[in-house]
Length: 332
Image (tube, rainbow, N blue to C red):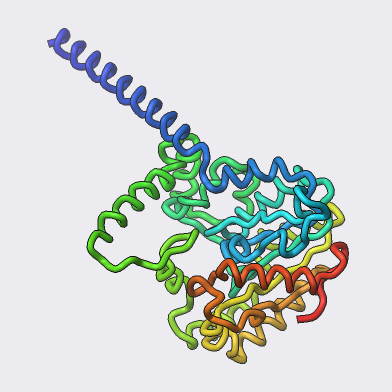
């Protein structure tokens, strides 16, 4: 009986060791396969941008909408524009804060920060569940994770899961792996079906899901947000830039005429904008409303993002409005 128990215990231990070895090997393999995710590529590009004097920051609206060469053409052929696009698609203010910190370390010449946003990005509190931290949110696992945790909320359960996930590549990089699987699944599902409109961020139809369901819902959100302070990461973005002597300009990004007509023409949005102007003015931050700059719907690729032609137009106009790179933007 004792011998049988010993054998059973030995087998259990051997099985456990094999499982751990497989888990460790799989974690290493996933980490290697995902070494060039979007966020990691952007951080790598940042390290090569010591020439930059202007930083553009934000989510996919700024990523797709800001063209450095159109905003500030290079001084000479074969040279770089003094502007650098540090925006990250599908990101929130905590990830953008981490990118800015990396940019400030790599770009000692920076003197102007252009922060693009839309809707309630500046005042909505940021909270995550563990399941949310996939895709470009993966930067929260590996780029100053302890620092970033001060700027978003998680439940105790999710916080514990986060601490485990960030130490295992097979968990922290699960989104990149699933993304590849999802692309295959969608390609198979499209066999024999009409081609779906797509852009660099995915299916164009998906971005309608990011809008409010109705004008009433949007106005209710405006009313609540008009009483809110800047969320913690947005306030920290301002502080970090100003500590380096960098002029900060916050920009309401261009949006399709349908979004403007349905949501931004509401009186509640005008009240919310006045609230944001006051908050930013108190922090000596310039504010620019570019939401109506591109009235042609054909210059948008989906419900939110500018097309390449629209991005060129917006960036040129933004460059003209900003004038001297060390001054705040003027005019709307």
